[in-house]
Image (cartoon, rainbow, N blue to C red):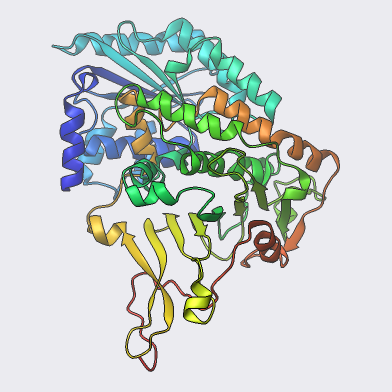
Amino acid sequence: MSGQISKVKTHVSHEEWTQEGLAIIIVGASGDLAKKKTYPSLLSLFADALLPSDVVVYGYARSKMSDEQLRDKIRPYLIGKHEDTVVEDFLSRCHYQSGSGYGDIDSWSDMNTKLTNWEEGIGGIKKSNRLFYFAIPPNVFAETGAAIKTACMAPNGFSRMIVEKPFGRDLESCKEILQHLGQYFDETNLYRIDHYLGKEMVQNLMVMRFGNIWMENMWNRNNVQCVMLTFKEPFGTEGRGGYFDQYGIIRDIIQNHLLQVMTLLCMSCPNKLSGPEAGEKIRDEKVRVLEAIPPVTIDEVFLGQYEGYTDDPTITNKDSNCPTFAIIRCFINNPRWAGVPIIFKAGKALNERKAEMRIQFKDAPAAETLFGHKIPRNEMVMKLSPKETIYMKTNIKTPGFSSAPIQSELEVKYDSRYFNSNAESNPDAYSRLILDVLRGQSASFVRSDELIRAWEIFTPVLHQIDQENIQPHTYKMGSRGPAAADAWSNEKSGYVRNNEYEWHDGEICKKEGW
């Protein structure tokens, strides 16, 4: 076990909840999200001794199956992630309860009886907590919440709910979803999960920005030319087109994942970054950023759709204008960021897999006069995936006899710097966020007022795209996107690309004549 993980374990083991009972209930346990994400993430926490020693995990869904059938169903998604003995120990703690529906009071009462019997059988604990993970669609949130509130709340510990997106498809549907759960649980018990907020590079932003004097000093309109947040996938809808066609790339990626990351990247420093008050103070600052962004207008949007999108048999509307690619420009109208373009770019069926934050700085003063030609702009790039990396594109003298400036990078690669890639890795985002919920840390979760303001920014233009049937530009699968996209983005952002620069991902690069 790595030194980093050991420190986390030691720190967590002193928190009260680790000495109390814990039951984790996965609602929608038979679905893909539970099998592929939730159970593997819980296994990671269990394997690293970050859960109470007597933890029990119950699945709830409508499918009829036994405990052993559930274990057989999820075992293929766990084998190989840890030693077989650890996997089987974890599976032995996994049980199942079926119901006729998610609001089946009798089935939830049966679940409560089983949990109460288990809790009473644990010796030496003062109270027991329950964590409910909603791996279910929003249309059953209300009946599920009502049933849990009526029949399955923890009698003497906390009852916390992790809720998955989508949180609506516009402002009105978002408010409806918030009301469904808000009538049963207050904000302190609801943890709306956005897994991008659990990624290492995103969680690193607080320390990077506010723990380094040089960074905070240049993080403003005086030095920054533009801020760019990018998400790229090399595959299309792949059988999920029926779902995706109801939402599109703006709702699916930009309005939530990238917007959330942007608020952390651009917010001002809260008064607290650790301790029990930090979560709300961080979320207050995120809301202030959103409040300074006016609603997006159609002239700030570039849409694309890859060729063959509607060939997906699950898409019924073969004339769909649903965007699979979008670039959007926003502005934050506050003293720190006024006039700085904020660019969101997201697309499917593109030439690579990538998610990153990129900040391009302004030209170095008088550099062209001093050196006799244009000097490339500095950039800070924080790659969220596929490889977690931070690098600063920096100008240095060409190695050897030449004195001409050349662009290189100051770089930290997490895999090689902190982990032995054969045996260790960064914890996945879901594991990190589930642990945050158990610890009562709210900073990495989305508050209701954040959701409402985010939809206020995007709903008008989304309705206009739908109602006016605005057509996207087409592009070939495996390309960078529509042919006109780069020029549009560069014009809107003022971004200047250094075509001579290549990022070599840690490889030694030597040119002829050095």
